[in-house]
Each structure stands twice: as C-alpha cells, then as structure tokens.
Image (cartoon, rainbow, N blue to C red; front, side, top):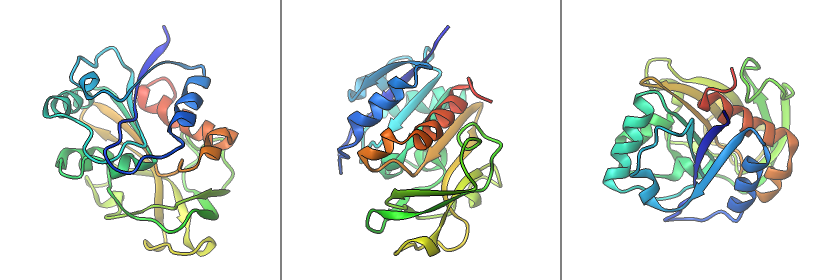
Length: 220
C-alpha cells in the first residue's frame, strides 16, 4: 500500500515562490500518495491515515488550537513529520513546535552559493550525497543549535561550511539538516530548499525524498 503524505503549505508571513515547484517535486518522487492543502481544517481532522505530515515552507501562525492538539497527538503517538526550509519560521508562539522541529529560524544572509558538509552518510537523506556538496541557498542561522535540545536526541546530518559563503553566524558545525525522535514519532528537517531551482536539482530532490521517506517510516 502506498504511503500517504499530507503536504501543508499555508503561509501567514513570507511566501516562497518555490512552493508549487516543491509540491510538484514531492509528487514526482512517485513513492507517495500526496494530499496537498493550505486549509488549517485539514490538520483538525484525524491524521492517522498519513505516514507523515510535511510542512513545506510554511510561515507564521498556520494552525488553529485544535490543529495544534491534533498534530502533537499524531506525532507523539508515532506519526512522521518533515519540515522543509521556512517550516522553521512557523508557529513561533507554540513551544511544542520548537521542540518538535529542534530549532527555530533566526536569520539568513543573501541567497548565494556555498558548501554543505555531509556529517552522516548513514541516512536516506544523505547517503547519495558527496561529502562536500556545492549548493545555492539562504544558509539559515537558527536561534539555538538543535544538538542542545533534548539531551542528544538530535542527529545532525548536514552542516554548513561558513567559510564558503558570506554572512554565516553559527560557527563550526552549523546545522542544516537533522532528524530526531518525538514521542513515538520521527521528525526530519532540512533548511535547504529556498529557490525554485532546488526542486529541479536531482541531489536535492533525493535529499528531500530520503528525509520524508525516513519520517514516514518507508526508508531506513
């Protein structure tokens, strides 16, 4: 049976023009049945039929109180969650969401080329990537290092080489993509994915698909 995803792209703040490209890329993976929505009511309904919920460049406050309760219960009881790029700019006033994701967005320099360093090749999101990955993105800084959250439960997969671009503010080991457990559920996040071109880049699309597949429990 094909795993089903709920891909949520509601924005209440900055809206990325890459969102529709991103949704198309997830559909084109061919591994999942995809329900795409921007309706908060979709998160108020039972989520048990989904292998994972994907927040794809969401921004601002995008959930109702009932949606928050439903999402937390779903992940804690074993559901998958994947956050992409501006998902870290979402639900700032809901403490649980910060714990779920592992870190919150702080700032970013200008969109520019740089180098991502693969720290862990033993994950579906990274096993296909070179050790040094040349990419163009916004190179998000976060308010905190996710490694400090939850007593080591965060597994950082990719970091940024701040010497390769201008404006980095986190120093060595700057996290870009990671995974973690939340209750009985699985959480994957990647900070990459700002530009429309990313969703036509085979390496990035495989990174995204591997991370979502891991969160959904279909890729080990």
